[in-house]
Length: 539
Image 1: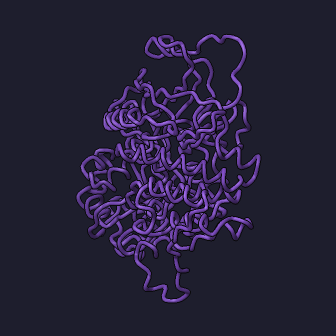
Image 2: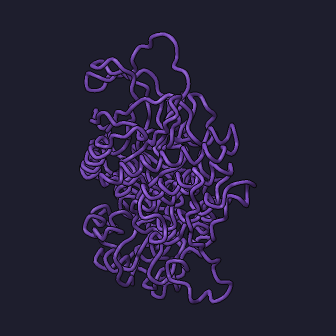
Image 3: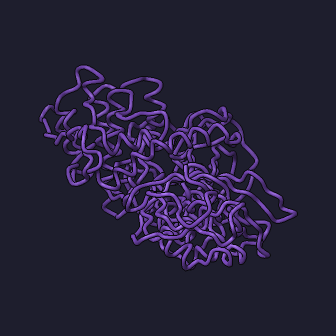
């Protein structure tokens, strides 16, 4: 069996913990023989028969619907039960996804909640995902690859016409059952998670090969981002490899932003020039130069397949070798991401073994930085433990060291939302983990919900670092951030204290800066965690 994880990946039940997570709906391979006692019954209707995938934010189950007498896939999201805003987004996006009726989109049947768990019920699709097929077979014959890609494009168009953008399309999220009609999975939930979750390194690793340049830069993604991702998928179908690869997500993101896309025919001889043109146009850096719609891309693919091309593509010129100071601030910030690569490698080496991960058929936290309006930062609540409690750096975080704080202080870092449920007074038994508060804080900061962000600080923190200066002003010019690490490294529930280690990249209007360190956390009376003391430094 395979299932899709929160990033849309598929894994076999019992797969190694270090096995790469695939992506698609649960339900690949042969079903187990014989009846199984349900593990749990949701809403008096869905019998959970076996867990076929597990990840940081969700579990996926093969289930049986008592009412209709059919097998379904149930994806259960964790840690979001106490966040009313997330629940509202989740329900809204699930309704939108359920409205997509197309033979190339896996059907969403139902959604609901059980205790603190939100769940979504989807079509159970037996079959392999495209990633597994490519690994097993290598490059797919050109006409077959074009046929598959054209059908995927039509499925995307059906979603886009209803205002639903996938945002995390990749071969792991595309199933190919026996009927030959590819099914796209994981619609809707990526957007629901995007506003309130924090990007985990593993999620970025699973998706960086396929996201668009605008997503890599933390800009809003529309339907043309899906067109770009489909261009990457088609490239991989044709050649067996991705157009941009690297040792870590930072390297790959830089290539998406700066490197010209190669022609598929440079990797595999015999591919038609018209097919090259289709791929290159889909992979344009500028969204305005791509196919305007997925339907237009489907038409171009069919023309190439039927020998009626070519479709002229606008080639992207290689980035200039000189004039680096003239780079736009957003691109200059990405150069500094190379520094973040080292932190990523270190954090991965130091990270405790992760639980088995899975692929899930409906939700993927799209690994993207977030953007925000701009103003000028001047102070930051990041004093190291040895600094005077009221000292706060005032220098711009991405351009100069602190000027008013002792040498051991540093401006705070801002992390992007992707795994964290917010603090909402959940009972102790169901409270979110300490790192959830940290990620929620940075998510609120980027949205400029400064009052909500300050509410996540303890009274001591607010006294030492007045929010008007240390939040409102400090983060005014922050335009994006990428969390490389957000890990609970110590926790004493009896004492109500915890330590969260973070590595994150903050992008501002003037550049970018990598921060590393810890947040000391304390537990409030309602069981939620509050940020009590920072110890962050520039890298």
